[in-house]
Every structure is written in C-alpha cells, then in structure tokens.
Image (cartoon, rainbow, N blue to C red; front, side, top):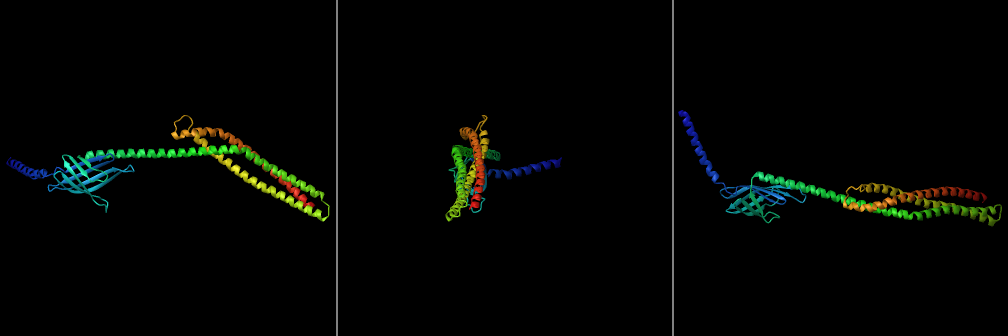
Length: 341
C-alpha cells in the first residue's frame, strides 16, 4: 500500500511539472497564428501562418484561381514576414525560379487579416478559418470551373453548329442559283446543239454539190478541167476537216454539259439530305429556318432540271448519231472525188 501511495504521489508530481512546462508555451502563441481563408468570384486563397513571440511570421500561402481557360490553376508560396501590433508585412516567395518575390502589407484585427499588394486586387480580406472550410471552398471553386468549362464547350459547339448551318445555307443558295441558270440555259443549249447538227448536214450537202461538179468534169482532159477537179478535191477535204473541227467543239460542249449535269445531280442529292433535316415539325436551330424557303425552291427546281438533263442528253446523243452518219457520207464523197480526180 505504501508503494502504491508513493507511485501516485510521483505521478502527480510529474503531472504538475508537465503543466508548468507547457502552460507558458501556450500563452506565448501570437494571436495571428492560424489559418485564414479569402475568396473572390473566381479564386480561393488560403494562408497558414505561425507568428513567434519575437514577431516573426512564417507559413504558406495557396492560391487557387479560375483563369481565362476556365480551368483552376493552383500555386503555393512560402511566406515570411513580421507582425507589429495590428500591422503585418509578408513576403510571398514564388516556387518558379527567377520570379521575384511579392511583398504584401496589411492589418490584423480580431479574426480578419486584410492584405494589399496582390496583382489585380486592391485588397484581399481573409477570415480566420479551418482546413475544412478551405477544402469546402476549393470544392466549390472546382465545381464552378467545371460548370464554366461545360458552358464554354456548349458555346463552342453551338458556334460550330451555327457556322456549319450557315455554310449549308450558302451551299443551298448556290445550288438554287446554279439550277435556275441551268434551266434558263436549256433552250439556248438545245438551239446551239441543233445548229451544230444542221451544220454537219449542210457540209455534207455542199460536198455533194462539189462532187456533182467534179463528176461533170470527168473525162475532160483539158488543163482547166484538171485544175478545177483538183480544187474540188481540196474543197472536199476542207469539208471533212470542218466537220471534224465542229465535232471537237461539240464534244467539248457535251463534256461540259455532262459535267454540269453530274454536279447538279450530286448537289441535289446532298441538298435533299439536308432539307430532310428540317422536315417533320421537329425543332430546328434559328439559322436553319432560313433553309426552308430555299429547300422549297429546290424541291420545285429539281424535277425541271432533271427533265432538262434528259432532254439535253437525248439531243447530245442525236448530235453524235448525226455526226457519225454525216462523217460516213463525207468520207464516201471524198473517196469518189479523189477517184475521179
């Protein structure tokens, strides 16, 4: 029992010394020591400092800010400084090499630390807070950043859709103008192709006249008759060459018309797919409303253009058939003229 009493007395004695040793240390803690939280609409700041009895301050400053990219950037600074009554002077040392330190000045009253000197801010007010409050504000800032990024992405998507829809409208308008021009040119092209076909026949008829003249001079051995027959053969060759030249021009026209018809057919197919996007009463983008009258015009123009394509195709086929026929006749006339000569 004596030993138990002595053990208890010893423990009480040690506890007394512990209280005596630790109590002065607690009383020496400066009121500035602790955590401070500050925020702006797009940033959260956290300052953790320890102020010693000799008024020196050390700690860490963390800045979380939403930049122009809508993303959160985080930077941590080492803090040194001093406190004198309510006056506080701090220096933030950047973790980035060669970046100069940032001096701050301010006041400390109660639980509020007000600092000036931060770039882009007249003053920063920090309230005493704990780490949980800081974590909560950072979480809110991250959520704000995600929302801003989502809004930016939605805005960029909408802008891209707008640009695409405007591009479609330009294509539709261009197709309408091309289809109108194609249909308007139908009569002119048909007339020109008909004239080319008649030209083949006219050359053949003229060559036939020359051949009749040459046949009339056959057997005439005079020098003048021989010269006349030779000149007629020259004219016959010129007729064949003229037909070939006209056919080359007609063939260029045929390829050009066929190319235009193919392009129109392809563009009508693409336009049909786009115009179907705004049918059925489903909601459309505001700029897609401008498609509707153009699509209505194209719906009316397409069957006319397709009919004109078929008609021109038939005219071109007839032109080729006539050329082959007249070329054969002209070749026979030339052979006969050369034989007589």
